[in-house]
Image (cartoon, rainbow, N blue to C red; front, top):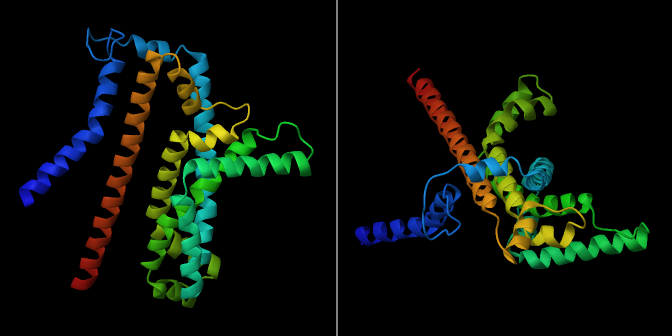
Length: 273
């Protein structure tokens, strides 16, 4: 049984990562046919950094993703603190409402937000072009906040409330106790939530498509290319994005593991005393 589980796990990882391997190989291929490797070249990477249109699209995606991820992380963390302080019945109801947007199909979320923005823009604000950069940013914040709550709330449940109370007894006011006790404890969950929001925002197509207006992001541009032909520079850009995100995740996990080991050593040292 264990051998079968190992084989199945290996097959799943192969299925997940072989497409990325094909993409990376294609980004260094001199030929245009991805099924045949004709030779090694960096020409596609050189063309990528000379393509101002593609770099502008990447800049749009990064700007929206970073802003939306930061704002959603702040809002989601504050919401998690509020949910944590509710009584058990209200907390359960709040978490149920929070989970609905994550299970809701993206096309439903995208269309509903688009209708809301158009209604507010035309009927209440009197604008013809209701969909702008700001509607795109708000849409990304809206679908990212539940993921922050989903990551931060379990970490709050693991906190020892006695540490917070001890900080208050030692002279800290609630604000100081929060920044000195609670925030350092939940910071790994906050960082993890930010990275999740960042990857989802960069990758998002469906919600962006219905709420972008005249602002075009990289996923929307790639979708437009698939109707004709995907530019080889996209292979190079996708490879760079994959490597950067993978590096960020590995560094984040390494820092979290180092912090956990440091805390464990501190606990063992305290027990020894």
